[in-house]
Image 1 (cartoon, rainbow, N blue to C red):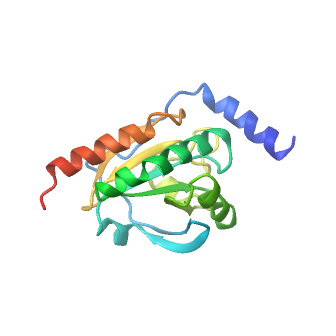
Image 2 (tube, rainbow, N blue to C red; image 1 turned 180 degrees about the vertical axis):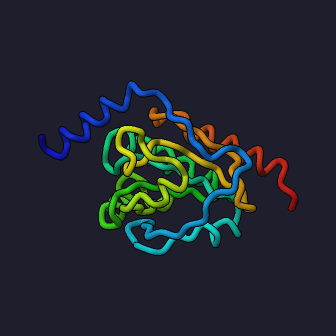
Length: 181
């Protein structure tokens, strides 16, 4: 089975599973982390605590760079990144891909709009209980919105890439409407 066939088979297997339940509840403390990331093909170190000082963070987990659903989702987040930025939010994607793959993905699929972070050991995926049930070291498709205080404002889980951006955008808009300046 070649690389593409293996991922197509995994996609077919997981497509019928429905959404998993994100374990981090609304109001829970989001685990702090830092990870190698890429934005516009350039590597850097992403630090959640530092980024939260600027505003909320939309942290979305996805299974594998350059697969069909993950590319669709990345395009949708890329198109919405200016809206998130206007609300003071930062978008970052996370998978267990290596940084070399993500440097390319950040340009091609993310269209230089937002960072993608590497979690090749799945440590962060496990901290956020974002692993796929059938392949725990691979991320499920889960989107979190984290407040500047480090609290989970949204946990949206669905293998369908559609819906993640709208759910996250609504959560950030609600945060912005109630945030104290």
